[in-house]
Image (cartoon, rainbow, N blue to C red; front, side, top):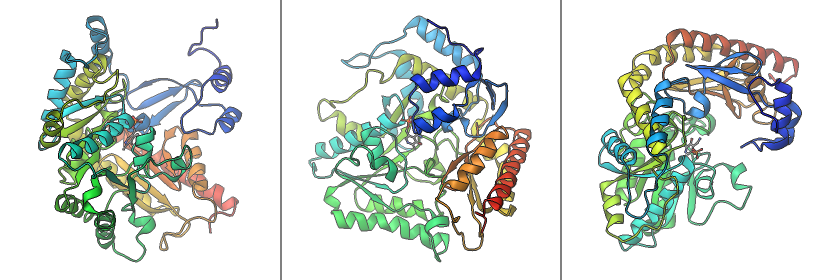
Length: 463
Ligand code: PMP
């Protein structure tokens, strides 16, 4: 058996990777031709690859490494817990200290009466729990017909059958016969792409009212819940107009519809408050959390549930649902230490009042670049809409994502991890980002934009 280590040549690692490793959300054949970039270590906000390049990770991994890389205390928390109790389940009337302590902690952190925690291993399966939970809740209330969950086009809620069904990604629904029954979708509050001649405020209201129209169409007696990310992440960092969320909350309240806030990305500081629900002053019945809960150091997710929903479900006999790793003690121990870091180091305040305002100022200035039609940022979630014609908010004369991919490649080539969603460039850096880090980030972003502009001019795409 070969032992595969960080010291092997990149090409050998790439060949073994292509031979045996199936990557998520990847065109396998295309990757095999190109070879994966191999990340070997990381510290703070910086990744190191197998060629020794130092890369600024402006995506915090997959929007998750909130406390940054290289935290010894998280390694110690895991090691300590593995030595003491590496695993025990929470089925069959059993519990353990890490699961109890984290549930108590999350109940204290979460807004309002969100006081009950059902554990999962990530965001997708937590959203699967939510589907079963809200349907079971309404059945327990004597309304078993309230089953439909309304979501939004271009939402992302995970990649399991349930999560991908809730999500509004056409490409995902096209594979494997999704969505599952009793999931409906309405429009997204994406003013830049879809707002036409409306003001953002008018458009936000119009989008929210699509929910009311959908409830009327389906019948209030059939609708269990509405699910949405406070700010859509994977859809391209779509920051809703200020009019959107208050109207959504009003509609959910008026029609007895549970509100599920998918906080998998927004939770734990990313929007400049502990939760996106606080940024938008909404009071969900359930919040989905994952990612920043452990800063990605270990898999864990959860549904944080209101008194009303949890108590109703508890009174209805057995909820026939759970995962082997629900409340995994090592994951809970790491999450607790991670939350301690977020609080003790005031990372949410760094987003709101420290580095955040500086990042906002610099990011918004990117709108002056000839390629950028719109530069939006909320907390540590930013997007640049690339366009050949700013005033018309026009798309390029090429398939959507062609220019975005070119820009992503220049960004990676210049040692900045920025992601593209279609022709939007997005960032979601670790919450420890400093002002000097911002200068590096913006400098590399400008270089990527300049190189992209030069390349697409040459290719005749900038018209
Ligand atoms: N919900 C949202 C809002 C997400 O962004 C994601 C992951 N990007 C998920 C759910 C799914 O989480 P996971 O990949 O941990 O299953």
